[in-house]
Length: 117
Length: 112
Image (cartoon, rainbow over all chains, first blue to last red; front, side):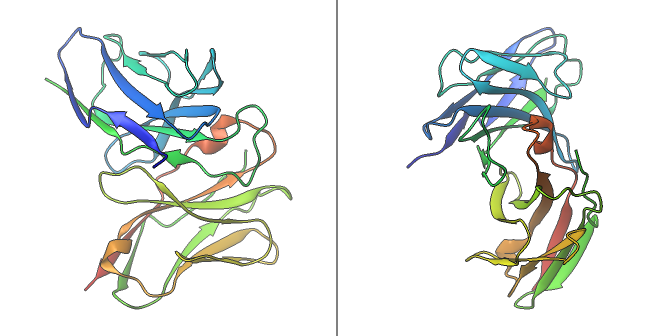
């Protein structure tokens, strides 16, 4: 079945440590997105990539980094510079990137809960 | 980008219809109205979208006001599994990924 896989489901970070969240999709989608969700809040955009080897900062990119070396993969690294990393992280994808259509659907993974030890 | 406004929370009894409102008074003529829902500890899932005409699918119906400044997501018979946060967003031609930011949505509680 086609879809988006996020791993791990739960992740713990020690102070000063970088951690990487995995996001893989087999939908052949061009665009991929990372969101952060705090308890009781909506989704805020961290980074997005509309095509391989290109990515853009979203609204809250500080303390995070990404890469897009393959179409299927868009890993997110939470660096030690992110002082409040505890949140639910969601990855999403959409068929078109730079040539998007206004009636397209976003597809989401099941999320990674990151906590600080 | 145009914004949407939704009530923070709503309650419904099981097996009764639910009408979830969304206001988008600054919508432009080419903006599509999309609805997603998020079950607890899950990622959001697509529900329905429309431009001008009312839309129906197996999950829900979308009623769009004639002036397009508001819309209503209709669940015809709420079940306990419909308890979720419902998000209304607008998608326009600008191609800006910032259109894909979700506000806090409406938390729907379904009472047995």
